[in-house]
Amino acid sequence: MPSKDHFSSNLSQLRRFGHNRIADHLQGVELPDGLLHGAGEDLNINLGHSLFYQGSAAAYSDHQVAQYLGKPSRFYVQPPMFGSVYLNREEELYQKVFEKFGATDNEQANSLEDLDAGYLLSFGVGMGLHLPRLIEALDFRDLIVVEQFWEFLALSMTVQDWTPIFEALDRRNGAIHFIVDGDPVTLANAAFKALRGRQFGLIDGSYGFQHYRSPVLDKAHDLFRDMLPSLAMSEGFFDDECVMFRHARANLAQHDFSIFDDLDSDSPLSGKTFFIVGSGPSVDQSLEAIKANQDNAVIMSAGTGLGVLLRAGIKPHIHCETENLPIVYKAVQSHKEGGHDFSGIHLIASPTVDPRIPAEFDHVSFVFRQSLTSSLLFCGKHKALDTGATVANFACRIAMGMRAGRIYLFGVDLGAITKEKHHSVDSTYLRSKDSFWQSGLGMLPMDQEVPGNFREKVYSNALFMFTRIFFHNLIAQNPATRFFNCSDGAKIEGAIPLQPTLVRLADSDSSVVSLVAEMHEALTNYRAGDYPIPETVSHYRQAVERWHDNFQKIRKGDFFSFYNDLRDVLDEKDDVYQAAAQALNSGTVLLMVQFGYFYLRRLPQDKRQAFLTYFYQIFDEQVQGMLTDFEELLQNA
Image (cartoon, rainbow, N blue to C red; front, side):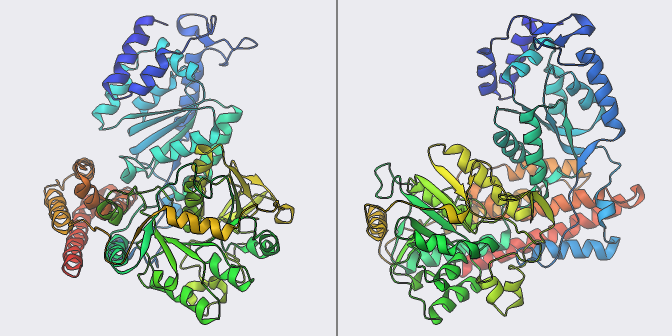
């Protein structure tokens, strides 16, 4: 029955479990008179023109949950793909498991009898009567509640006691995540982020439940579904972090450079128009528009977009680079060897790039990227920025840091019209004779259909969808900046689709070249050898060794006890050095654990204990190898 006592008690439970912001907001929600209809088992929501539920809320929820349990909607981790330059260590573990216990195929991957999982995601709360029923029937840890109306959440807190919900999940080492917003992009992105939280290693077999439909929730659900293939992607890899640590120390010691921090509103480039140019297939049809407007916009090339522009006779004002592979330096060098002039191009890059790249440019700015080991250790007084997963994300974030007024995206396709053509014909990818370049640097296959910017559907992949999530968030967080998507690729929510031929900028009243030079002078500049690299190596070594000591104490019995202990180790971030130790190890460790959870549950019961014993053994070997390689890294630092 509805009760003020329920509401008051539920607010206390929200605060008890750390949801103070939600409790504060709910206290200010006024429920309209007559919103509740009926009494007892016949309760319903009165929308004025109709009742919300067919029948009563209780009967509707019982029927809906019963139907769902007959065929639950779940999302599954897929069998690992081999051949990535970033996953050599993980692939060794996968291969050993397959050799001993057999490989899994797609049919096995997409079916599962075990009911346990990391998450249940509910699109819609309504009265929330379905939630206790789902918790009782399904063994998941974290509940993610996605709702567009605060009034519905407040109503649910009034009609039922949420204490059993909180306590049941707490006993499972789980929690509740509340996501309430009227914007479908925000809802989808927040749900995706929540799924990459504490139970990330257990996402295989997690549940998706749609309690009610509305234009907002349907849109959020569709956007979220597009994101699913990128859900299991790691945010870091041990071997990659080691390379970036080594490169950052070298770059910060060897070159003259400035550090890019977000500029004030009186930045020389504040309110200006920026062109972000990638090397997606559609950039070939955009070059004339870029050339026609090149004196009236700040042109920023993103990664391999540099070569596309130079070969078209367009010199970017700023070039952005983030990749640390030696092959990227060779591509940059090849542009110079081909007769292209770099003078006047300002390089803005992560300090983790190949240390030979900055020497090719006259002006260099480094950007500390959030969550990287090197940024945590070396940023000092400077701020580490959230710059996304790809160089296109990076370039767009830097433009925002310069207070861009308008941003136009060219060749930022995040997909393609045909599966085979993944980049511009003039990009290094398709001009190179190197098979690795031709493969898109080993990029994932374009096997995902997503809404297009200028057409109904295009093909994309998990990394591109991960990139799109960042764009969605960046655009939503910066409503004062107008974004135009001139790329014939994936639709980016919040960016206005605009054919390149329609881009006509007014003449600029200032020289863009001069403004970029002013911007450079406004940054904090350092001469070679003057950057105060903190004396962090000894503290960093101690933190990593402590991390490994704690790892050795993890119980290796049943999988869930093991996972609980592992999460406790991974969640220790008391200081910057512990945070760096986590950034170094957690990405690779969680990928291997995620695979272990996935594989364990595709085996018959009589083989599971043997698998676990073997998995713990080879998992320990890989982690011990990480420590050995880390010590070698520091010896050479």
